Image (cartoon, rainbow, N blue to C red):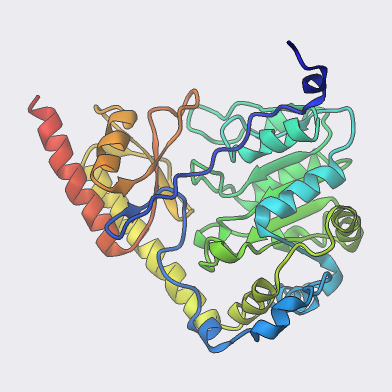
Length: 355
């Protein structure tokens, strides 16, 4: 018998995160984690267990002040949350409330359409061009807001500031969110545009470049009016979102700029070398400015490579989505991890060609 209460349950197609395999010999290149640990400075800071009985500071003042000082903005321009996902979700709730559809690319971070469906926000997804680039004219149409990552995910393509200005100049009456989860690995941040555009919100994370995915620290920077609005929504939802260790360790990590730059440089260097080696094996990919590449092979289906690599204990990301189902997103790990992947690919491709 049909239970009538089922008609009132909200049904959404959830976001599916990358696999989290277990095992000592696994090579995990599927979730864009930083292969190098966070700043050693955080090991010198111990949180007194007695403090864990206390609620964390709901205003996250120490972390907010540290982020503001690091980026050279005022503290009332910074909002923090539990990873950039939390920050983006709060931003969707706060700023995308008109009857007009928000705009984001058809190939991009797949959580955007999940939030839009969950919060009942109308949306359109203009198609990327054949080369996976965003076409600015697609964002000249009437809309209720714009959001996209720069660099984009999963393509790794980064647009320049003239591109961002063009989008902003054609969308002065809505909020434009630039998701800069990967900006530290290449490209130029839109932070310098903030004084010129009061409707610009930039979202960042500690998960990728600062190697702190396990602590879930994200933040947004924008004009004080936007930050106050998003804070009001957060306090109406959950006042105590961030835990005390995250607040403390996130603040400390910002003090170690030398280590931060060292690990970023390592990843960029490995990416450059790895891209060269992958081309020799018959792979092609867009120019990546992120900590991953988005690759397709000239002969072998991506699904076959994905399954074979997984069986060998090497995890990369495959998407079944239309237009990109023959691509693999491969996180840049350590040199040793990437050499292991290349060795596997050389053997696999050689065997495949002999079939």
